[in-house]
Length: 171
Image (cartoon, rainbow, N blue to C red; front, side, top):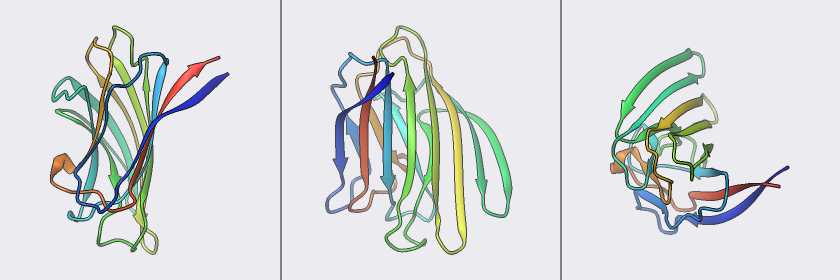
C-alpha cells in the first residue's frame, strides 16, 4: 500500500511572490505528489508552470481542458516549463482558489520523468475550467527541486495560496 509522506509545505503570506520552490527533495521515495490551492493577483488569465531542477528545457506535454459551455480542447506543446493548469484570477469570484494535483513518477530514476496533473478553477457563478495534462521531463537526472511559477513569472500568487509536496513510499 502506498503511503503519502509530507515533505514540505508553503503558504503565501502577504502575496506578491511569483514562484514557490521546493528544494533539497529527499531521494528516498518512488514518486512525488504536489497539491496546490492557488490564486493569481495580477493577470486576467493565469497559468501555473512547473520547472524541475531549475531546468528551462526538455519538457513536453499534452493538455486536455474543458471550459464550461465550450467543449474539450486538446493541444500538445514542447516548452521551457510545463505549463499545465489554469488558476483563479482576480476578475473571478473573490476569495476562491483553484486546486490541482501533480504526480511525478520515478523522480529519482535515471530515466525520463512522467508528470500528470488534474485541476479545477473557475468563477463560481459562471465559468468552470477543468484540465488534465500528461507530460514528460526528458532528463535522466533525479529531481531535487521543483518550481511552481505563476504565468512564467509575470503573475504573482495571492495571500493564502498553498502548495504541499508529498513523497510516495511503497509499503
